[in-house]
Amino acid sequence: MNKFIPGDLVEILTDRTASEDGLTTAHACENGGLQLYAEILVNSYPSFNDFVGPTVKCMPGQTANIVRNIGRPIKIRSEDRLWEYDVYEVLVNGHSAQVFAGNLKLIRHA
Image (cartoon, rainbow, N blue to C red; front, side):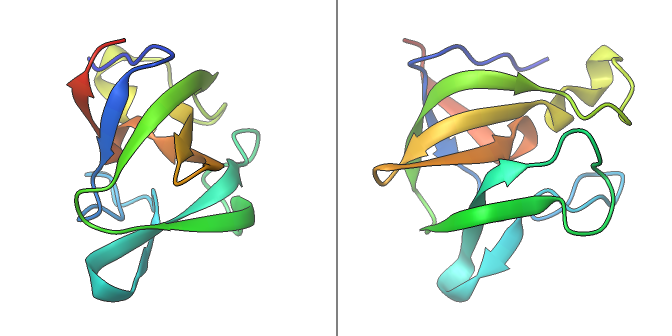
């Protein structure tokens, strides 16, 4: 189970746009990157249009810092095996964005 804490340095995994369950976790953009959104609507995910607000593009190898744990979408059970659905706020390229834990890889703990 991956748990990130504020200040952790992470890599954005740009090769993942869906969970093993087939749920969308991020949107692809050009050159193998991901487009992260300012907010993931945890009160409605998974549904239509759960990614909202300004976006930031992340290219392969992009790093970010964990700001805080937002929580898990209310429609996703709290089982430990579902850790990949935990949503985190990150600071990336000077912008705040939210991302699922399954799209993060720990580089260094704070």
